[in-house]
Image 1 (cartoon, rainbow, N blue to C red):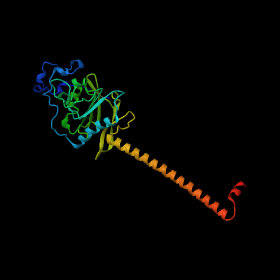
Image 2: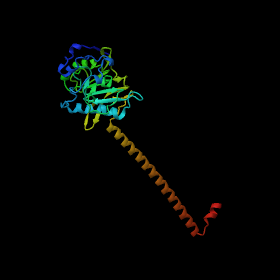
Image 3: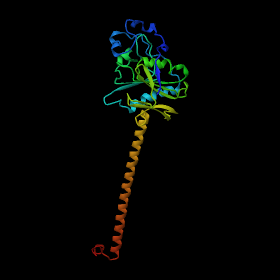
Image 4: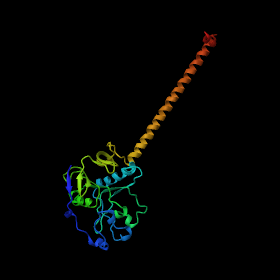
Length: 289
């Protein structure tokens, strides 16, 4: 187990032009009490979305796979506990600082806003949801993303509980999958790929997702069973229906064969009785003997 100390010197300086309207408020998001009230500030100048494209086809698919399987197969970390899972959505975690944009984020005990077109609801603003996300996942495309450098520091500063780096072709040279848990002001690498705070695990799985065969990052339960995507669940349900239909068809076939055998036995009996009568023998008398 390795421990990485946070070095705030690697964090990029604030962008005053973006946050100048909030200069009277705190810059740190240390505790919920220090986060601004939604009524205390205007968010109209926040850039919550841009037209920048995703970096590659694999990342785009991976970003959709992880939230899809949660919504299709997960009911949250416990009874009555809700969650949201988002891909490529800005995480605003402190005033006068630009957002981080994780490939995937998961936050428990929060609900999806009813109206996501309201400016302050378009992104994940920590002060709107009342807490940081529980998981941030980065899919490495190249070494320029600084997933184990600048972003590592920013996610810890944002107080994200778990930070996951998925490096499919090992651009960073430190393994395909790394999981970190925030403990105090440090991220500690966890080796078993299990997130106890969410009762969720992560695993590498080789197979087809949509039209692409590759090694994918997948959610799993404590026993290592995959959380199925909506397409996999639909396929599973279809296979279950086909199996049930096959079993029903077999039962009907067996009942039909049984009926035909009974009819054949009755026909043979009737023919035998008829032959006996033609020979002048009373079948009923034979049965009495």
